Image 1 (tube, rainbow over the protein chains, first blue to last red):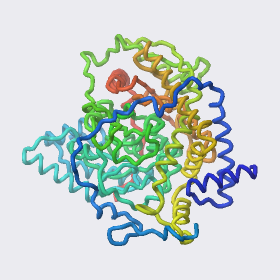
Image 2: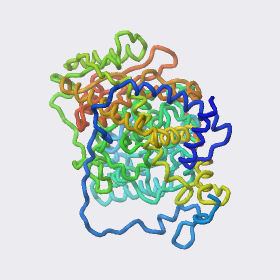
Image 3: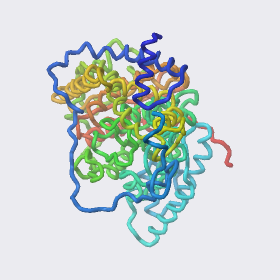
Length: 99
Length: 496
């Protein structure tokens, strides 16, 4: 397991907002390397003539009628909240924190 | 009155509607069966007995008042734990959502309720639908009713076992890359993945949004048709849902004739050199289709070998985005971290997700990250187009494509747990239809040669929106063969 690969795992984990321990990063890095190695087969195909598409089936894109409707009740939305204050989700300080 | 476990959903509904058995009695039979088998099979993550009993009493009262019986009147059903049903725990097989009860119902789940179905509980699954064996569940494994040492497949493991072991006649899973078809094959039951967009995804907790599809398991194809008639159809809460009415089954003059139907057998799915037990069994099934009048033709789907990497790049990219919502703010687990918002996010996600989910989030983040996006995600989207074009070309020549659902029978629990690449190969025959958004069924077609006897599934894939055709051909196969009538040998626990 190369040191640059562990650094890649750490960089990606930071992007993904995912805390991973030292041992865990090493293990994830090893399988990461193996999996990407197997996926290299995709590079063999010439795809230069193909357009970018998000999927083979075009979504129906059906629109609902533009009329007012009730939104999701606040009390129901907050029922599963880990922490709340009045009608809001309570979270740690977002400005002036350590990061 | 016939025993509960011998009835499919259609027959059970007829008995309840005709007054031969009550809905209350039916849910009691269901819970007695769960009590006798769940401890050894690991089917449910939660059951909701009070809710189910109250709903059954309500249905009996409606029938007593002479109100019309719905199409699933009195039928106990089980849902995979990634589906929202108000008041039920939808934990996705994850510590991240342990104890979280859905505050609303998915469109398809509401349609089940409106049709008279009685949800009895939420079934075990690989965490966030990522896995092929149930071993990625944060809570426990599920066991194959044909051999408890073997996996039932995944990720909709519990729902497949619930139907195969006769706990419920009808259950629902989600199929992203084969998560209903593969466990259906390994457990010896029917599992149907509709065309992408056929069933609303509103209330299905997202994994890979361009692939996910709510999909039923049943012991008969007529029950799949019954379920699809209830759950499919347009939904203003899901703009990607097809603007079509609910699926109507095709009712042929002669159910057992497939005259005029051409079926392509891809050499990549069933090469001549393959003499294994699955290939032999599927070849015999194809001969049965020929005997019904179908014409078999060898075809090629040349990009099949690229489907697994394409799928795992696209599905992990979509998962990394969809699972960004689990950050400790709005629902589920929260771990405070070192005091800042950012450290709370990272600590919550580090503690809440299991190893496979972390691996896939990292892979997905990597293939979408600056400098790698075009090389991985952009390229995979283009290869997805090539895989879909293979099918389009095939369907210019044939009506359906057929082959095995899974390259092997059920593998032993633990056998592939340490090797993600080997585990991903379990999906090799199911992901192509997923990438192309096509309807596909796994239908029982026999057993492997070894001991214990382990089931094998025949996969039929149709063109986009040809769901009724796929079900019709599977129904003819079912009617002409005895494979769907086989039941696993189960020793009941004494009543508690």
